[in-house]
Structure formats: structure tokens, C-alpha cells
Image (cartoon, rainbow, N blue to C red):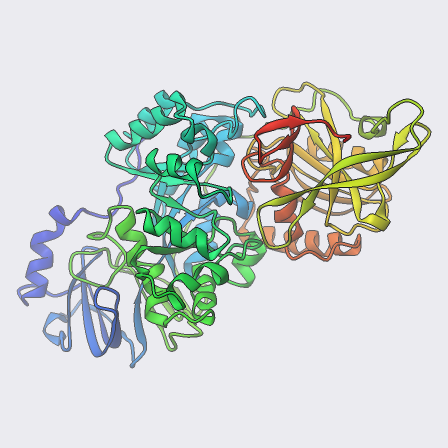
Length: 600
């Protein structure tokens, strides 16, 4: 296909920019009378104008009235703050359950004008062709969306099977695509530390292309394994949860990415490295990682993260730097993005307050794209091809007995390994529980907050089911929650207290082509259909957000009190984050990276 042209390069625009700056030619747009948040100097300067031409900033000065011609669009700032467009340094579009187009429509009114996306969710389902679909879609949009080529598909070879695989050859090919900015998060940290040929080969392909290697070191061990990982090339990491994590990464030359997603609250602890320890903030970046559609529509995106960081004690300008210039610099784009300065893409926000950060006007590439929380740009829906749908293949109708867990012969009680959910964090705990046996089958136990969890293979129609136990959701009535979003292999995860509901939920998702569903007593309480790769909806973000709200309410009606429990549910099969997970091959101890038995 022929891809649409993005913004003109600086070289193509240089003559025009110089002519506007010197007054030989009028600007396309002039923003007048703004307080200039200068992320290069760390200052907030008084009344300034900015002239825009060819989608780029041409000049910034106290008075640029000489740049105004008869056809120049004039935006009166009226003393408001002029802030660079916000950048999300690491995130997964699929976590919003919408397409790249719909994600952009949702976040533009919140001031996000640049995103660095890692589509490893669709990569695990459709492989390199799926990545290309999202890459090409991103290039059609009026904001800057760069793609990181997924690195770990499957995320942990030998411990899970995905719907596809990616290696050094695919990475090398992707590095030639126009929208690829680097390698996505290198989750196989044991592989890197062990000098695995495939992992280092992918990193080498990225390095040869002079692009950035994303990191993902999800272990509290900062000893030899971590040192080996850093030596292996990853340039950033968003998996820290403690202040020592951020400190150690920065001291070793990495960028510490501090995330605030819908369910991950890792900014408050780590930002103390700056606010209390006085570390140089230039190597700290704010990001979201995973944002639910309800969060995007209701609470915001990077503006939410910046406000939160300020609330933790960061100076407003410092927090803004962590969401603008720091991000751009990290990806080698300091001359393109992240600041209001001559030659850069004309992305800016007008806001009346730097602390609460209301997003009143958003300009992207020199065009007003949002005003007062409403999208002002016309963005057409993006049509995904048939190959991206019909990806949920169960192979057979599942029965309630598929979710039975037999005990050892003659046992009245068993000691079972249990996945323990940690609220607002990605890691889990490796727990054990003594569970009763009835008629030879081990039962869930609401008194101990132990539900069943099952992984249903959905890529090849094998009809296999792996069963286990999970704690932390608080379900206290017969119910089941099923999802074909199950990072990162994206089989189907079913959590429930009733085997009939679990089978009904799984079969329903198979029939609709994927999604998330809550069932209780054989009744569907909520359903979000996700026909694109079983990960994304083809509906508008507002529609998906409304369905997601019903999903959250339905989970609460079943007894769940966790914040954004759906996000916790979706990570239960992520076999690269400690401590205990489930895969299509069984239970996985992620502290030792090996399979373990269900019963102790």
C-alpha cells in the first residue's frame, strides 16, 4: 500500500521557516501572548508569541506581530501557559481495547501529541503482519506515533506458546520501515543476561539501525543478572517499583521510565530519586504502559500522569520535561519533538494552570486538533482487513468439566500453589492455600478468596485447558470473567468460582471472536467484543469505554473491589514478571523461570 506523507522534514521546510522568522514571509499561524514553558532552560517566561509555518515552529519571541499576514491564523493565548505537546514514552495501544486511530481520538483532547507504541500484543497473535497493520495505521494520523518493533514473541520461549514468533530476521526487516523507532521492551531478561543468541541478535539488528532498545527488567535482583542485562543493550526500563530501581537504572546509564497506567502506580515511590535524593531529572521519563479505555475517556492520558507526578512533589516544569523533552531526547528526536523551539514540529498545549493542567487548546503539526476537551480534527475510522479477525479458535465447545481440578486419589484436602494478585502493581505473589476436596475434585474457596483460573488455548484450536488457582479478586458468588486479552501470549484467561459459568463465558468469547465478558448464574452481565485479533474493538473509543464501565461494575457486583481489576486479570499469564503465572504449558515460577506443579 502507499502510505500517506507525514509532516515535511526540516530540510524540506527550512527555507520557509527562515523566511517566516526573518519577516520575509507570513506565518501560517501565530499564537500570541502566552507564558512560554521552556523545557530546555527549565523556565517559565512571560508574554511570548510563537510563529508556525509548514507544521513547524519558525520563531519564538516577545513580539512576532511582523509574522502575521492577511491569511495567518491567530490564536490568542491571553496569558495562558504554552506547553509542548505531551509524549508517552512507552505504551501499548491494545490495552485500551481500541485501534490506534481510536486511541489517538481519545488522547488528543488530553494533550498527547506523540506516542511510542509497542504492539507486541497483536504481534503475539498475528506476527509481523500484525505489527505492519498497526505501523501503517499510525502513519495515517495527525499526531506523532512511532512504533517499537516487538522483541519477545513469545515472551518466554519454552514456558509458553504464542500465536506467532519473531526473531532477528523480522526485527531487521522492521528496522527499514519508516515509522519504526526502535526495539520494543526486551522482556526476556534472563535470556539477555545469559547472552542468548536470539535476544542479542535482535538487539544487534536494532543497534545497527542506530535505533533505541527498550527494556523490561522485572526482577528485584539488581546483582549480576541485572548487570548482564544492562550490558546487553536495553536503554530504558519501566518495570521498576522501588526508588532503588530507578536510582540503579539511571546510575548505569539507562533512562528510568516511571509509569502510571490504569492499574500500575509506580511513580510515587520512584520519583523520590529526584524529589528527595536530588538525582538529575533529565534521565527520568513518564509513561503509561497500559491504559484502559475508561481511563482514557474519563480521566485522561499523559496529562493525568503529569498531574500525578506534580502531586508527588515534582516541580511542574520538571514533570513536564519528563513527559516532553526527556522522552524526545531518549529516542533521538530532540530536534523534532518535545519542545517549543524553532524547527521542531509545532505541537503545543494551551493551559491556564500548570498544576491542575486543564487542556484547553491542542495544536499538532501546526493545526488546532482539540479545544476544551473536544476533538477538533476530523479523523476517519481505520478499516482492518479480514486477516486480523476470526483469530479465536477454540477447536471445540468447552464443557464445565474442562475446568475441574482432580485431587490425588483419596485426598480430602490439598495444598495448592495460588497466584496472588497485588493491587496496582504488575507483579504477583506465589502463595499457597489448603483447599478442600469433594467427590475427588479440588474446589475454589471464597472464604480464603481463592478462585479458579484457567488458560484456554485459542490460537491453533487445540482445545486444551490448563487449570489453577488465583487469589485477590474477592469474588463471592458464582461467576466467571473471561478475556482473550492475556499478556503476552493472548490465549484466553478465565477466572471464576463456577465451572458452568466459566465454560459459558469461554464459549461466548469464541463465538464473538474475542473480548472480555462477565457471567454470573448463566447470565451475561457485561461484554466487550474485541474482534480485531481478539484484542481490539472496531467501535469508537467512547462506546468501548461505556462497555468497559459496565465490565468494571459487573466485576464489582461479583464481589471484586480491586482498582481496575480487568488490568490485573489481563496480566495473569505474563510469564516474564514474577512471581507466579499460568501459561498454556502449566504454572510458571517466574523467579526461577521454570514450570512447577499445581500441588505442593
